[in-house]
Image (cartoon, rainbow, N blue to C red; front, side):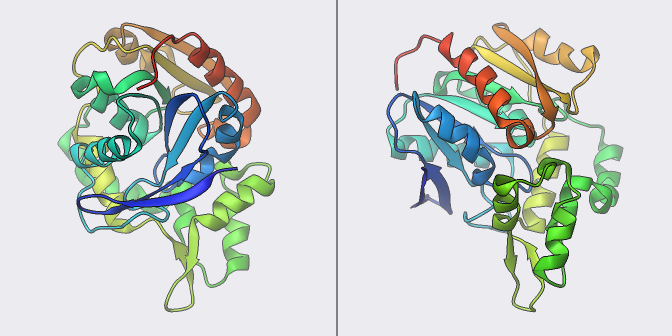
Length: 282
């Protein structure tokens, strides 16, 4: 149902999926090493009442992959340029994992761009101590969700790895298409991720270095807490309860990628929240 589009920005080309539907605008932002297609099931449902756009963030999917520019301000500027191109003064902005933290950072600086903010199992909302940032790259190879980057000697080997990953639990047609779309055949014949190591390193640096919440935000906000996600304890929610002054917290079934493993339940929670927001279309 969505159409792939690409626009040239000042520094990069940004690719996105556009459902070309009517209604209030929704900007869907994926997590690390993912891409726009992860939102396809949710976007298909939202399109009956809203106008969803799912973005390949810089360094991911079909968007440009520069060697630098993965700090929050640059990524935020990419999205502002996209919204301006679309004619959106404001939108409902949905961020997953690292882009959830980036969205919170964005809302502290340009709250007028938000009709509402939805944070889907965000990570590391505060900045991390310097020693942790120095040692974190040692764990890149052990992080399960990065094991899909490869390289793999062939597509069969890649698919076997994909079937073992949490975000593809169930391995249905949607999940397989998302996993395949994240990979490409490399010049040496191996199969590897479209997500680059420069993007990985740059995003991790920003996520660990820059606090996502530093002052109160009045934007209507929804925190989506998957039952098997990374935010499972009350102490993890305290920063959001402190700074987000118009906050709803809702638990959904599934893991960190609830929109991929339990998309129907996820979309119902998201739609119910959006229906409570009465804002003019930007």
